[in-house]
Amino acid sequence: MTKKTLRPKETLVLGGTNIQGLSKPNIVKSHTMTPQQSRVLERLRKGPLNKVQAIRDLNIFTLAQIICALRKSGYKIETRRAKFINGAGGPSWYAEYILQEKEVKNG
Image (cartoon, rainbow, N blue to C red; front, side):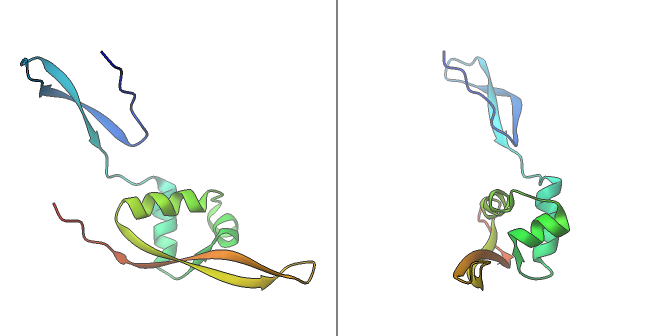
């Protein structure tokens, strides 16, 4: 028998049955947002967001990870590369995230 470990944001639901009619646990993904995801989503609704703004305004250091989770939840978020001149006088780039719309999932 192989063990299945629960990943974050999954809930263990008891009650399914296997072929032999024995009870077995079912894994159901949770659709709840973390507080950080909610704050980022609320901020994206107001306009573009980049990592510096997320750190300064929201105290969030893992913006890319949160954007990835929001995309998996069905939110359509565009990534744009913005150019700036760094301290050495050369060009550098950073990611800026823009909320497009909530994607509708079928089923």
